[in-house]
Length: 279
Image (cartoon, rainbow, N blue to C red; front, side, top):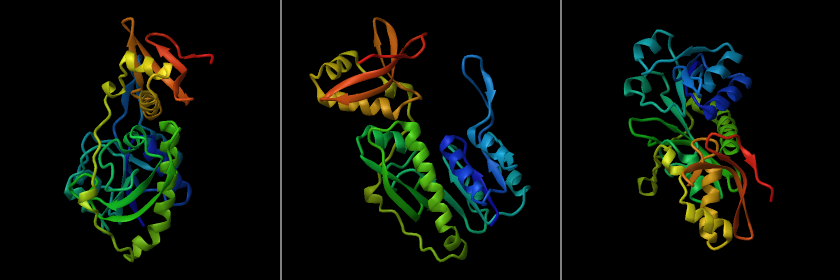
């Protein structure tokens, strides 16, 4: 089975590595261009490009995917899309013989859109899961091929949840690939009445009012303590949860709940290095 993989961030990179290590590397990776990052604006490749280099996988990095460019790389049985974060034209989605499979880290139709993991964590869900579906013109809308739930996310940090969901997604894909190849899977349509949606996380989403933080730390408001703790876990490391005190930004890197109070474990003041708080 010859396929192309669309994806750029860490979630996609883990899926790509697991499939390749299992003997199913894609013939082509399509990912974002290298970007300047950090204060020194160092040109940095996306994580999937780094992963592809370990398996000698050919890479395309267009600003916008082009069917002509992809067609120039030959025929494909299917495409696999994981956190590509770009709109893929319908002519590309329908190019491969068996269509395009999407990997989405939620139990669709819940949490469609770009930030399903963060939304699940911020809303206080205890568990989440992953979905494999046939991609169509609408966002995370196509019929489901397979799903797997039971991934615990409470009291975990974002990067840990990303890794677990990517591992589960790769394993699930490898399980269904033989049946998908023979056409023996019967996709099931999503229930539109159950659909929920997410938006791209912005820096402002991590802002915490100073009085709410004080209430959470003092034990006056357990509700605020739980809400802020979930925010810290979901948005670490980027864009991060933060407040402004004395005109300076304080980022909260690690926290926990104890006896209904929010305990800060690691903070970072604007322009300073992270600091552990002795409890």
